[in-house]
Length: 309
Image (tube, rainbow, N blue to C red; front, side):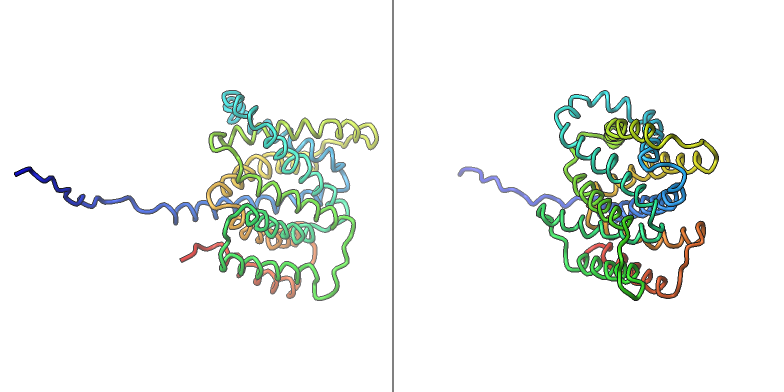
């Protein structure tokens, strides 16, 4: 009688604890860190609006940022140069949107627009991130959409201040900046998995600085330079090291961990941070209406950034 081999059920083995909660927490923390640091950059853009021309502000910011990331990213970028060449179109578009254009528009807006308004208008970018991500086929979920809408309502009320919204030229520059940043954040989803974060930062900073070089030369020829002093050098060091090297690394990592739409919900905290910093550092007014709207924004962030059950 032939032997019949029966397959015995495999003994269940212990599986490691799921990493989703840890990944979510780390991604949210990195997004919040980037948002807080960028909030300070809006205050510095406003503070430097009368002393440093916007193009020169942007050029020196990225030159400092390039020097800050070079010890970590230059060697990796050189090792991955073949990969970078294969995805050169993606790298150049990311450099154009996130480096050369976005922050230059923010600096231009800081000439005429209060820092609090700049932060409020930039809060429109999470909506664009969600739209771009949904267009790419990612399902957002009812909870995240509800959080987006709740936070967006708070931003609109904060911008209106209880009355009609009258945009200034600086507000229009900020709207353009929000579109660029939303596109940049959505584009990060397409970053090649093999391209490391430091190599990507170094390459985009290098390309963005090179894109700004002709505009910087033209600004020097037509507007003249600025006088190096503690009031100009220290803010430039802040935006170059903290707001560029540190914050962009944290934001890019957060996008990789939790996606642009969920990170975008955290980004709604920016008008709250900017309003508080501009109130503390620039003596810009902050009333009860703004405080109530900030509470609404915070509630939307908590609702939309959490994990789905």
